[in-house]
Amino acid sequence: MTESKNKDQQHPLYNQDRALINSLLTAAPSDLNLVELARMRIRYNGFPGARDLQADLDQVMQRWNLTEAELFEKTRQLHATQSVYVSRGNKSETEDWS
Image 1 (cartoon, rainbow, N blue to C red):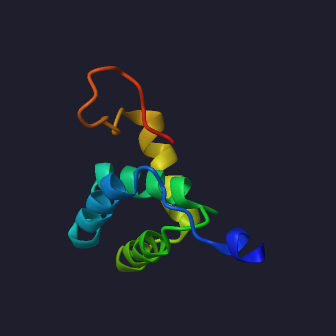
Image 2 (cartoon, rainbow, N blue to C red; image 1 turned 90 degrees about the vertical axis):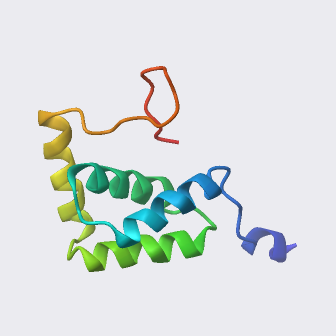
């Protein structure tokens, strides 16, 4: 019974997010990349699974010399002054915060 409680879950957007995070691993910290990194940090914060994605997000943070507080401060400033996030492949104006 405790085995099922400790089992990691598969996130429904894992494959899509894997591709994005792979690109972040080799990218520079542009406005869009900072926003995407923050979005992924929020999505996987506390998620019981996708440990490889969480480790890679930590690696991007280290490569860009950012703490989570610094990342979120920068992205709050970006969102306050411009529309940086662009939804991929969806013609509606919805944002993907799931």
